[in-house]
Length: 136
Image 1 (spheres, rainbow, N blue to C red):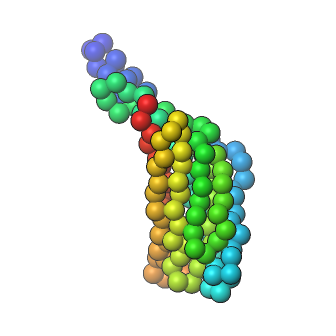
Image 2 (cartoon, rainbow, N blue to C red; image 1 turned 90 degrees about the vertical axis):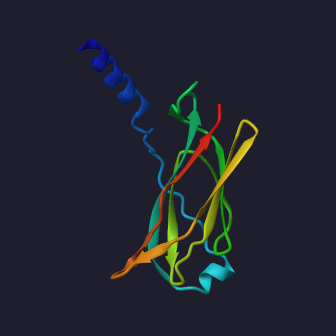
């Protein structure tokens, strides 16, 4: 019975709760291209970075303080440190098409984002949170 308890503790430790984000969400400023499109609400996204600290298995720890940048053709670039909440405008043409790039310890990773509206829910844009995993 004891080995099962040890395995359970190790499995739970690998799935730690993410660090809370206590700062208010950052809101990018629309540029001329973005202002030409109707805004239909907003989309909340969390940008998180993780560090793989495992030897033989993936073992992720929150990486706090990676330098990140949000870029889009519809709003001005926004720089911040991870983790961070973003409140992105949901534009009429299913935008923002945006990219988040984060750098840590000489490594740079990017993730593209596209907003999709859910049928019958015109006010909300659906975006997945951004999670970038850096090697140790």
